[in-house]
Image (cartoon, rainbow, N blue to C red):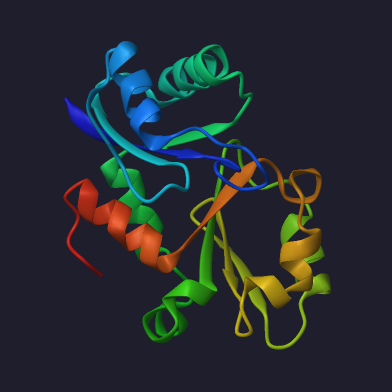
Length: 180
């Protein structure tokens, strides 16, 4: 068995709620081992040898069955997470202001033209890069002030879910990666 990081899109934001204790119980019900959550923001770490795509489908089905929520799940292995961490194009910014550096983990890749569209929306020193199949954002004034953040929908970007650098590193530690 190896660890899997499961990220839910939009969990506990915008009125979409599923208590973390119940998320862990759901994971155990579908045969996942040692389920742990990080914060109440749609982060679940489990142990499983199931292939990523199969696990995504099973988790999405279980979430809909148990909570009545049709939520996208993105599953990553520890090796994939280590690659994500290493690909961060904003390491200095992330070290200085981790809550303002965001990794948008994509379910099925970055939509064609998304990077250019985000760059066209950027203002106030905002930057966006694509690295390792992840969209990376630097929000020097915070996400709440960002035009990109307000307008970058799945229709523009593709289906994904964002995690700030603090959360990225904490999830990495949960699966045995050394702190960056």
